[in-house]
Amino acid sequence: MRYFLLVILFFTVVTQVYSRAVTLKWNPVDDLILSYRIYWGTESGDYPYSRDVGDRTEYKIENLQTDIRYYFTVTAIDYWGNESDYSNEVSTSGQAELTLPEKYDLMNFPNPFNSGTTFDFYLPEDHAIEIAIYNTVGQKIAVLEQGKFQAGSYRTHWDGVDDSSRKVASGIYFCIFQAGSIRLTRQIALLR
Image (cartoon, rainbow, N blue to C red; front, side, top):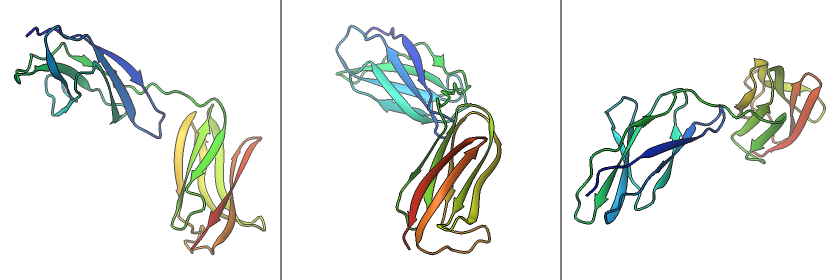
């Protein structure tokens, strides 16, 4: 069996809310291969994680932590169960390469909800913001986020309580995202 494999990394980075994903690509070996096995870890030469990926020569590993350097290598396994030596090791930079949002946005799920709902909000530039919940008569009942945020994507949660930690009644509420002159409103329904 030949022992040469070349691993090439391509990074797909999902924003600050989610963790990073790495796509590995490598040159196939000429022998009859049953499977390739990817190894990775956070220290060079130490690979506590592995995954058999069949005969494909590209694989995406998701849910890696941001701002941590990972080291990867690949082996080939033939039909008789012989495993090659490790390929050359490659590593991530350990720096999350952020893809900044193109516009201000606010989304939530689930809607309607009963125990809580999650809001994703997006900032294309650094800005002071406020995200608050209002009832149908326009009273501010809960502030979810407030302050200066760097450009990026974020997540916050509302569990159906007001700022005094009292559960609010079932009904229609409004989540208002304010960033300077930008104002986004989402109608949400709480069902207890």
